[in-house]
Length: 330
Ligand code: HEM
Image 1 (cartoon, protein in one colour):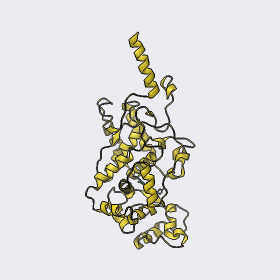
Image 2 (cartoon, rainbow, N blue to C red):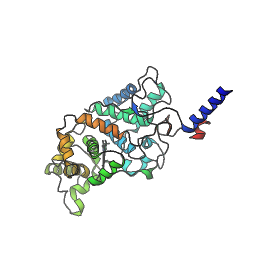
Image 3 (spheres, rainbow, N blue to C red):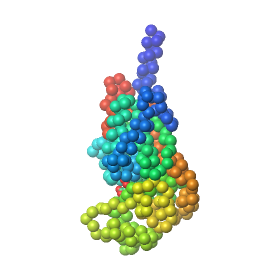
Image 4 (cartoon, protein in one colour):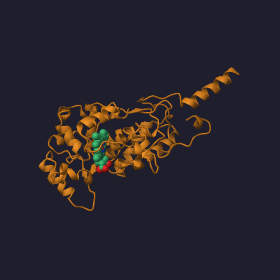
């Protein structure tokens, strides 16, 4: 009788507080999927997509996805949820890509270990793997996140490309990310593109002056007027790092020192007294890759759900249907 009662009590508490395990740490899934190494499964799918080019510039897609996920509601994969009014429908997320790759990884993992690996962890593992494939260096990612159940476009409040350095420091500070790590993370702009519409004012009518942003180099201006004509029926893409657009490296920081920052915020971090020295130090930093990895790990810690605060979705695009017993308490 007492054993049965104890079991009922345990089941009640498990149902009420969620699973009784979970923490964010390196190797959270080690030994939890039989002989399958979860991180290897993720890596293999990312490699396949990278080498077959099923998605262009995966590192750019995933770096941005991780940033946009973690800065809205924490790193809980809320960006992946489909819905008429979910985060992915918000303006700043309209050009986020890579969802199909995450689906493919999830499918591969579900086939091996049902309901084990959260979508939030998939984003951080896959981003790391993509960074390595694009010339970056390996960094250990922490895992053990749970997936969130809420995704609302109205929650999306991401920094605009013309945010000031001091405001950006405040925004990152609220997420426990220091100015130094913020600058390393902006180095994510070493890969990928921006749409011309987001920099048109810098090229042709900066602060309504009718001319370009004076901080822009002559070289960058001559490149941008070719790629982003004053009048065009297309919103073209321009690389954020004009010199090595597909490589994760610190050339981005060298470029912004020369006035070749494409986004206003990128250029400003090289000029503003609050961050200028940080940029100078990064350019000379022999441990750039390690520090970039460490900054990505810190990004991955933002407001995570663990210990039964969320769930492990079976499809990254939808919240699980509530189960009869446990769902009652969720
Ligand atoms: C103040 C902070 C930031 C601002 C204002 C910002 C702004 C932007 C903008 C405006 C774009 C172009 C989007 C478009 O054309 O639709 C972009 C692209 C991108 N951002 Fe950021 N960003 C910030 C921080 C970050 C961070 C922390 C990361 C990752 C560590 C990141 C990674 C990327 C990547 C990789 C792309 C290219 C995406 C692609 O080619 O698909 N950004 N960002």
